[in-house]
Image (cartoon, rainbow, N blue to C red; front, side):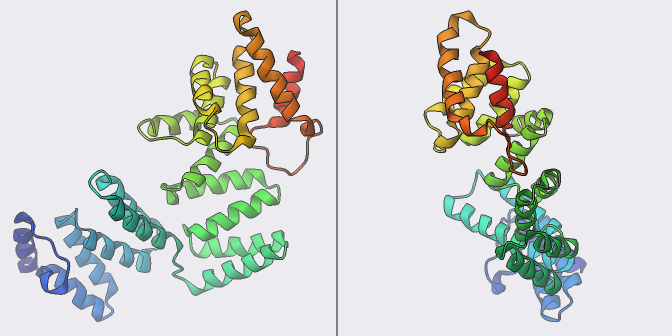
Length: 312
């Protein structure tokens, strides 16, 4: 074993990489040998040593991730791929990143236990037939067997939301966030749930962590609303103005109108601006005069309509 390690250290020092079996250093050849003999634990141990020696090797990372998925489950495998992507994302081409994201998605969605797969597909069949309660029960059984599976998490969250189990839906979004670090949609839904349950500090923590990232308009909207609730009207207005004209989801423009109306309400210099946006908001939300039960309302629009009416 020590001979393998010394030779591999030499190859790593020379900057050599390996893309075919003939180019594999002895330590990696040993890892492949044990894999061929179905000694997957030893193969993983050896591939981890190769990966430590060549941390920029996509091949070694991929081997480690696949074996971790097989032996240890989704969580370690997904972390291996995600850490690799985040470490080198500024050095990869778009096609390389696309390939790596596909690998990440594969580790998220491949079933490793037949029983979990069975429960999942049976649950999805029930959900398709509108039997959400039984469907969720089956999905929960799948989740208990195979933690961190993306498709199971997505099905669980959506079923809970449709059943009006909003606190459980929120908990699932939080539990799944570590497995969905690259999913914009998941982060948007989690941010909305943070806002709905008035966990503004979690929104600020997320925003601070993603300061250097390009936020979607939906993410900016939620951050802006949280800033507004925190008394930071000026910062909120800057975000609202940026997204007002570029919001692809025009159905959410009225939420921005609410934000601008609230921000300008106390300033006499902007009384006309306040009147314009508050009027727009009220006209757009007439259907919300009677709150609907068991309907997910992440922005608490019924409350906001009642709030704006009191301002008049």
